[in-house]
Amino acid sequence: MNSGAVDKDALLRKAGTLTEALPYMRRHAGKTFVIKYGGHAMGDQDLADNFARDIVLMKQVGMNPIVVHGGGPQIGKMLERLKIESSFIDGLRVTDKATIEVVEMVLSGSINKSIVGAINKVGGKGVGLSGKDSNLVIAEPLRRTKKDPDSQIEQFLDLGFVGHPKNVNADFLRMFEESDIIPVIAPIGLGEDGDTYNINADTMAGAIAGALNAERLLLLTDIAGVLDKEKNLVAEMDEQKANEMIEDGTIIGGMIPKIETCIKAIRDNVGASVIIDGRVEHALLLELFTEHGAGTLIQK
Image (tube, rainbow, N blue to C red):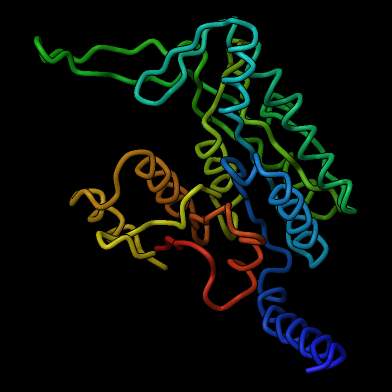
């Protein structure tokens, strides 16, 4: 086969892809999609560039993408560099006054502006925000308890400035829907007491999606999605199936809070939640614009 034929075949495949995507573009136009961005997808430069292109394409075809990003590994590196000791309780970073200053600096500073810069570089108009801007996310201290193994008494755990979304200023975010601006949000909240709180990025994204009644909440992860006992991808599930898989031990560890976030979002009238493998190139486009998707979809 000569090169001209190869080029023609490649062009035909691209045309076929666009044809397949068209009905999905029309279906999603005008709808809001909240994307939690983190993990390996954020640490790999090629994947980061592809993510920026995907977000800009979503905006160009009339969708309203809102990005909420994490940054745990970057925070850890900065704390280590500054020789600030850090500890964890049940997977949550205990955040004192010195730590929250670093957390805000890394999340609202270097990471946020890096994502905004990548979006703007490929023709978008990204704007960096945190939950503190225009009281976007009012936070309250996250309360966790743990039962003492000897006395069996529930004890409150002091996590410091770790917060949970109490209220989301949805009207502020709706102002961007009719504009060409793409909000990029750092998971930092402002307490009613004026203190700054570190919020889990999945939780922040879920709260924002629920407040906006978004069409989709999309969580980019470092695995293919939810796997069954044979390690096969579960393409779709409802709340009952998700709870059954948690109860029988199929879903374990860090996937449990992600599933809980997804379930809460659909209870808050989000159209559906999706757990996507962020390590796959153009995972967002595969999920939104193809028949088979690219992760696990959870819906009512």
